[in-house]
Length: 303
Ligand SMILES: [Fe+2]
Ligand SMILES: [Fe+2]
Image (cartoon, rainbow, N blue to C red; front, side):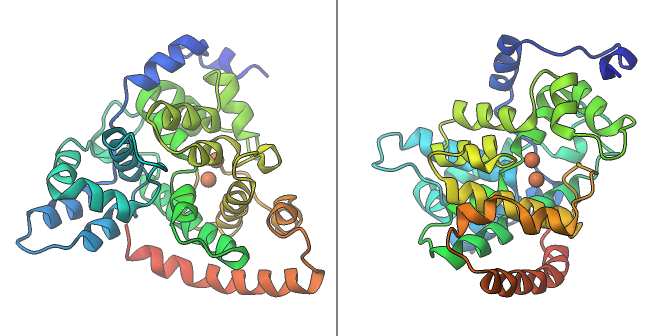
């Protein structure tokens, strides 16, 4: 069935329109609870950069905007900044305050289609859960000094926030109108809007000077075998996203069920651990399941 046939008010956009609209939406909205926490902290008499980083690391939109700002201001740095704490340190409180005062709140953003119906808080939980799990996956292979694994997990689905901001009617048609059970979400996005959230997210992050590895994670987190710059990172985020959806921690907006065998058998395991024995894989998966049991409690206190 042609989905657009029953949704006459939205038609797919061409590439030039999509790129122009993404350019117009530099300020991605944040969750109210986080925007308030950040504002209060910035006005407190005493605060530390670590406290500011702790608030920002719960919000994919603020994180993307923060990294955009630091990588635009410090364009000449040897390597682009992909750490939240480093970005806060470089920018300082005054610039973070400017970032905070122009932060739209997602629950208030009436232009966002059906804003009260999409579970934004649960979506934020999905992003944070993916970030925590992605870090767990990469730390097991190769401990990273920076936090690009956490950041990559946090902003992997930024394309959905971009879609809600720049194309609210299309977003509603994809996520809020009747959605056939177990339909392919990416296919549905492409049919209704003309682009899916992975490509949309990659265009946004690329336009805003974010590091290439983060752009690649946004682009290929559903097809990790296509990654070339950071295959391990993309594979880790792919697994983390699947695991968060499998355990139904938060919601990604994708209602299709993830079966046990789907995340146990995905090719991403081979990218991440080419020589992993079946026994080690079973031990690793048992440890992940324990993390999954703790995650909902951790997330309750964060957003
Ligand atoms: Fe996704
Ligand atoms: Fe996701």
